[in-house]
Amino acid sequence: MADLSVREVARLLGVPEKTVYRWVRAGEIPHDRLRDAIRFNRVELQEWAQAHGHRVHPGHFDAQEPAGASIAAALARGGIARDVPGTTREAALAAMTAHPGLPDGIDRRLLAELLTARERLGSTGLGGGIAIPHPRDPVVLGVSEPRILLAFLETAVDFGAPDGRLVSTLFLILSPSVQAHLEALSRLAFALHDPEVKRRIEARSEDAELLAAVAAAEARAGGPPPPAPEEDEP
Image (cartoon, rainbow, N blue to C red):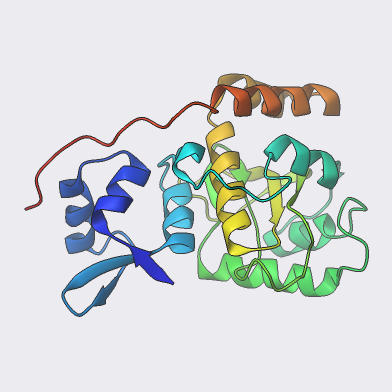
């Protein structure tokens, strides 16, 4: 649903409203026009921000979060897979869906197809060798709580990431609702900018060390988000 205004998007991304209007005029940001109003879809905006290196502070979301919104808790449920095989994007995604950390009863073949279909719409690569694959429709698989699977690939593969770098690390997000998906995507993207989390990922540290680094990054992000710069509309 396209329900965000230019002002709300500026606040979410921490940029002046003039910047958002410039992106709209240039066709650089996904948006809809409803009569004379410009509106933005929350999921599309978050995915666009993720792909273009804009951090949406987790504190911008509603205070009423679903149980288990913590990225560290979701990652503990999903687990960490190492040396996942596959020399292509499709093969790596299929191999990742075979990991036992996924919920019982999930249709793994369907999940692999949904992940591949999502990548065809646009890369989930963040740059820096990391991608965050997820189904386009967060609720289609019927999971009961957010779950994140971290997969270290045996061979780096091409995900069409914006920086052109091959991807060697995948974070698969499964969510029970659109709101939970937005929160997980925002919190994870924010945590991945943390220097200690980056270091642990690059070193492929032990599971406990990785989880502790993510939990610490979440704690540091727990304060209120910074205000967006003030500028008049054009």
